[in-house]
Amino acid sequence: MSDFKVYVDGNIFYHPNLSKLAILEAQIKEDAENIDSFTLSAPFNHPYLNLVKPMSSVITCKYGSETIFEGRALDDGSDFHNSHTWVCEGTLSYLNDTVQPPFEYKGTLKGLLEYFISAHNKNVEDKKKFTVGTVTVEDNNDYISYSNSEFSVTLDAIKKKLIDTHGGYLKVRYTENGKFLDYLDDFKTKSLQKVEYGKNLLDVEITRDHMQRVSALIPLGARKKIIDEEGVETESNERVDITGVNEGKNYIYDEDTVNEIGWIWASEVWENVTVPGNLLSKARTRLSNLIQGITSIKLTIVDESETGANIGSIHAGMYVECVSNPHGINGTYLCLSRTRDYLKPSGNTITIGASGVTLSDIAVKNDKNLSALEDEFFSKTEKLDSINDKLTEFDGTVQDVGALKEQIHSCFSEITKTSNQILSIVHDTYIDKTELESIQKDFQTSITQNSTEIRMDFTAVTDEIKNNVAMNQQLLEEYIRFKGALIELGRIGNAFTAELSNEELAFKENGQKIAYISNNSLVITNAEIRNKLSLGNESRGWFDFIPRTSGNLSVVWRNSETR
Image: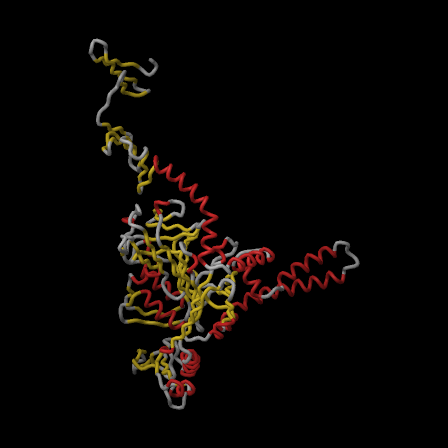
């Protein structure tokens, strides 16, 4: 059964085991390069529709104990059936709520990010604040110099001054101590799952955007510095270019692309490049990507983690091994985005690809990023080799050497598997190889059925459990009902009920409050006492109000020892 839940400002909005909190859609789109989004839809009779306040309420999605989305609703729409739908944006959008004043900065990349986030945090409420976390993007000189004479939106400033010039990705981490904003040069996690044609790959959609192709590029660097007669350095409007190192031309072009599509020009600025030779090198690398256009691939998959397999889900920002020979896909690619409907898992998609980069380029880059981790494992195998050699030398002198060698060989065998297998085990979860092969074989057999049949099989297994839960829940709701922060006790339709809240315990008759207990006091509309009313306490004694048979009312004092 799904462990997916939705909360609004900390209050439960959807729970898979509560029928009254049923929803119609719960689709999360994770995006490694942009802001995550969440589409939530609920029927007209959902009891907590009014809890969702666009631009105000915090919408949180959890899978188990892990927060997989947090953000705010942008709008509230309804259809013919009065079903409500909210489109929500992730917490990274909070950086669009503040502006950075004009500034001048000199220092490290991390320092500039901390400067931006500090200015942001000073102007927002606590729920929108971030703490700068891990920063792995580096500058060659570990020193940057930036300035801005105008106000700019915080997220735009981060993209323009950091991501556009140095690359990398922004990633929000949710912890018990708040939200951390990481700035990563690349992602290091590889999914244990393998997307493969004929197994768990349902559809492939390849998009090549030729409108973004460029055949000629004018590169520009940092603004030139001018020193006046008094030795004061100022920044001019003129920028560094490549004219002096490119045969008098301020542009470069690709002849084959010009012959194919003609002259299509573009200009790009590298704010931190001051040397013309370095600018020319960067421009050539950039043009080699721009002439290709933009290629992206959307894959519709079946996530093995949803079939009951003990295997981690695929997320945006993970590297995924994808093989589909009919489509020319074979390699380990970065998952740029992932769309998952937690109510209808058959339509899950992932997108791989990158702007202006061919598929083969992506595979080469991704393999390079994983090489450091592979080297670490290979170094372990060398140590085991050395141990194995020593064991061989002393084979005839130590009786237990044979058993020890067998253990070493077994360990050696596990470590010298292919790098992809090793990385999969490290980055996801430890699964015995034979168990994984069994899981994959069962999964491959079931995936030959269509998605409807898979869903029907799953439903058949869980129907009996759901029916039992529904019956017990219906019986419970007949006598106990949860209304926001209230608990109502009493059978539905009964004239007498009780309501327990954070402030009082109230008793009602036909919907009208007739008595309540609050702040150490009992307040009641009418009271009828059949025998005796006593006022006082153990230390001071009691006054007893006693009705007599004669019709008189007597008041008698007694101490605590008198019964």
